[in-house]
Every structure is written in C-alpha cells, then in structure tokens.
Image (tube, rainbow, N blue to C red; front, top):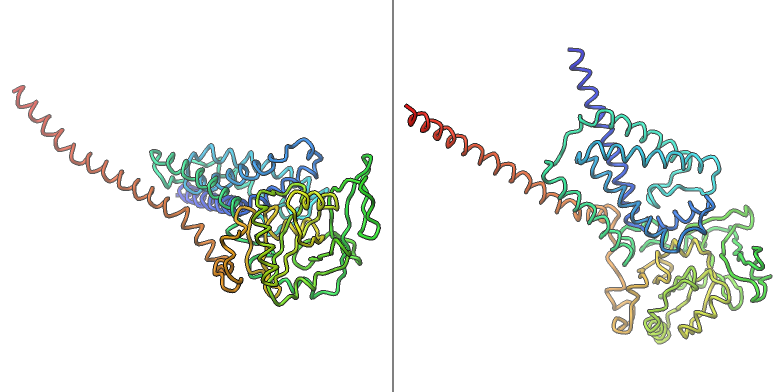
Length: 441
C-alpha cells in the first residue's frame, strides 16, 4: 500500500515538473521567435562580455538567435507531448547545465544587466536567472530519472509528424517576424505608446560618441567632436547626474546634427504627423529602398509633415548615406540602443501623431509612391487596429494549435480504424479455424 502511494506521488511530481519545464521552454522560445533581432542583440552582448565578438561573422548571431529560439520551443513541445522522452530530458539537462554555468558567470561579473531569457516580455536580473536555471536543471534531472512515467500525448506513429510540423512552424514564424516586425511588441516604443512621457522628466541626458584612432578609443560630445581622422565606433546616452547608461522611452533624446540643439520636444510635441526614419548604423543600413524614401520625403514636404532621420552614426556615416541616397532630409543623433529598441530594422520607419506612435514599418515594407495617394489621416493602412497582447497571444496560439489539433484528430481516427479492423478480423480468424477443424474430421 505504501509503495503504491509512493509511486503515485512520484508520478505526480514528475509530471508537474514536466509541465514546469515545458511551459518555461515554450514561453522562452516563443518570445525569442517573436523577436529574433532582439535575441541577436542579446547574443552580441553575451559574446562581447566573453571577449569573443571579433571571432563571429556579422550574420552568425542572427542565425544562432533563430536556431537557439527554435530549439527551446521544440524542446518545450517535445516535453509537453512526451516525444522522445529520454532524449528530450537529456537535451534539456545539457542545455541547462551550460546556461546555468554561463548565468553564474554573468551574475558574478555582471557585464550585462538582463539575461534576455524571456526577451523584453519578462525582465530578470542575472541572479534571478541563475536561480531559475538551477531549479529547472534539478527538475530536468528528476524527469530524466523517471522519464517512463511521462505519458505520451501522441502515438509513436504520429510523433514524427508533430516533430516536423513544430520545427517548420518555429522557422517560418521566426522568418515572418524578421521580414515584417515582431507580431507582439513588448518594447516601450510599441504602436500606441505615448512618447511625451520621454520629456516628462527633468533629468538631463548627454549623448557621447565613441571614436577610434590608431587603435585607441575615446569618448567625445558634440562640443568636442574631432576631425575625420577618427573612426566612428558607437554612441550612447547617459544621464548628467548619475552618468549611467540607460535605455527605454524615458531616455529619448534627439539632437540636431547640424546645430547640436536638443529638438526632442520639437519632434515629440508636434501635434501633426511626424515620420522618423530610424537607422542605428547608417554604415550597415540597406539603401535598396532609396526611391521609396525619396517619394516619402516628397510626400511629407507636400503635406507639411516632419521627416527626420534618427541615427547614432558619425558625420562620415551620414555623409556616405547622403551620397548614396541623395537624402535631403535632416539628420539627428539618438542613442543606438534606443534606436534598436524603437524598430527592429536598419533602417525602419516610425509614424508619430501628437507624440503617439501611430504605426511602424521595417525596411521591407516602407510605403512608396503607390501607397501615398492621400493625406495620412485618409489612409487606413497607416492606422492599424490596436490589438491587446492577449489577442495577439491568442492568434499565435491558434496558428500553432489548430493544425496540431488536425494531427491529433487524424491520429485518433487512425487508432479507431485500426481497432475496428482488428475487431472485424477476429471473427474471421475464428471462422477459418473452425473450418480447418471440420475439414480434418
């Protein structure tokens, strides 16, 4: 009796831990698949903190981001449905062992503030992340020890179908979010965000530029910006009082390249429409949409809308962009991290109306002449319906689950058909046996 009770307790514990692991991995993988560029930025921070950034090609972090996110999502689905139970449990232990070691190092050294485990959806400190990984690692070890107690949700015949479908969904979903923009925007500059909050504080910010010459890097402000013999590396915005690097909507500062004047209020408090071309690094920006940008700038000039390019690039990068594209619009300096938070595209486009983010476009869908047929207020495509995060999460859930339900129904129908055939075959076999007995008499 005691043994039976013990077995039931172990069964319950194993399956609770299984659910904990599957939900955590599915959530973490999904959030990263929604925002592959954000995961790419976080990987770049990781490799920079480990001192191996120079060994990676430019495209490697993005490929790693997609593969890493897909693996997390797939492992969570495998654990949930009991697919390859022993292999999945082992893979989770190996994955968590590496991540636990890494997050312990990050917690001690603290080179970055946020691990990025759940993207921008849930923020955890490095020590919180380490604690989470320790708990998950212990859970994975327990699940592996009693992996046979996990009941399969699919027959072995259809596990491969679910597996292939899950991998395909992960890569297609990530590709869609890369080509367009993240379907769910957890960042402070999402559609509907009020940028007037960015100037509600009295805190003053200073933008500094990191330049390099003869292998030596130094920081400069607009007032002491050096000559063209220095190479632009990066820029950042810090508070004057605390001198801490910051990010988010509260740190927005827009400085005119031409005059060095802070024009944040002029942009944000404009009661009309303002188009912001967001290009963190003009040196790496795609100039293939040059004609679209020219048409859009002409459209803004005709209708009295502001059109400004926000960048963190230095004077050389701006001059090169102007030469390549024939840009006649004004340029302003903004912190690179803020720009990458605004739009996951280089370049991307923001539409503001009375300081509120009305719409966003990646470089692949920036509106061209054929779409600019009327004033902004008369173009429905420029004013998308605002859906809550819950509505968007439901859409993602249905995209994956509805086809999965089809597989589950097909699986059950196949089992019923097989059982029915076995039921019909038994009387036939019995009849044949009786006939053989009669012939032998």
